[in-house]
Image 1 (tube, rainbow, N blue to C red):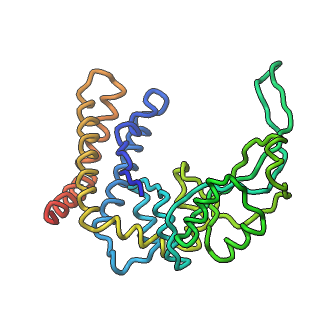
Image 2 (image 1 turned 90 degrees about the horizontal axis):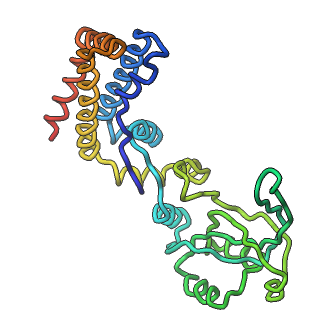
Image 3 (image 1 turned 180 degrees about the vertical axis):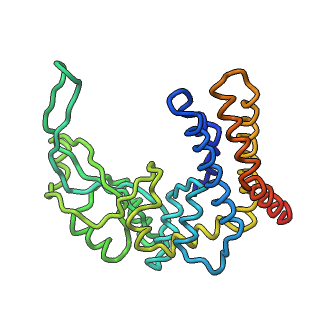
Length: 281
């Protein structure tokens, strides 16, 4: 699992529309974002990890963290779900073929034509057939629809996604081509930032939550929130510093933000959260 803390963007957001919006509107952006940051951090450090529901925990985390699942995460969840040990992901060729249009160039140089493709599956492989899959790959012999169906029925493989590779008529001589048939797939793309929002995760959220709770303890979150508040303070100081600049737009916005921060009660909330986190060290 890849985890990154979302960046604090208070300074950028406050001055994003300088010269295009009024000073008051820009200062309002500071107020809105500041309140949101404090609210999220306050919820996280006071969150009841034991009593919270899976989805409450997840919804709170993604407001601060960027989460991307990797192959090992899915193998672990699939192993628990199907009560089989899945050891690796690999690509397997099939006997299914299909025609699809290929394009090249643009404008006057644009051209298109149909090519024949061979269907491949990216699959999770169970420990029981790992050696068999390895031997088959060395033989370069594609899997028939019947073989794929049998492996799926036995939970020996789980299909993640499919892709096609152009195949020549000469290559077709090595096997009997079959028409395309759609098999159950997780439709997960490991290059996608949103791969933790797949249908599989939605239907097996408790397995996903187990992974999250292994990664995010209250101690880890408290440590991250201290760093988050430090970044937030840097942005606040930079905004207030601009209240002294000779650039009129920046100085007026900085003054409005500083005055609101010092008189609205948000400063006390900010300091209170910092004290709570420091006591928890």
